[in-house]
Length: 134
Image (tube, rainbow, N blue to C red):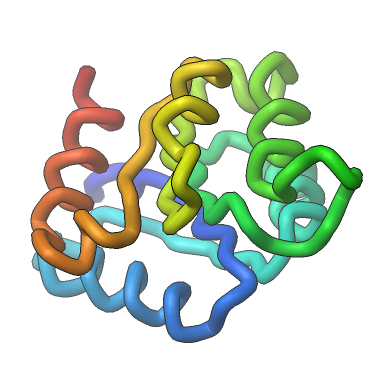
């Protein structure tokens, strides 16, 4: 039996959760992923602490307000990056926020702008493969 890679997708918009799930299902025909979802940064954080050992956490930036100066996605990534539970976890931010690249660079994680994803859905497949196998 092939080991399934664990992915957590965190987004507060149901349509985007469905979109990401559908793309992954279409692009990876083999049943190689165990995918969980969360609808807020806090819920995603708690899932990671409970489930442990996610290979990839895919998150939106703009969700609930956690702190006045932070996007919930930034809070989520920042608070998971240096934990023992996530030492082997890769992070991917998918957002329509104008500053996504700067935010991802500051956190030292990968990102995809939602506009690019809509124009070229295969970018998600390539990014997941890159994160898993690099």
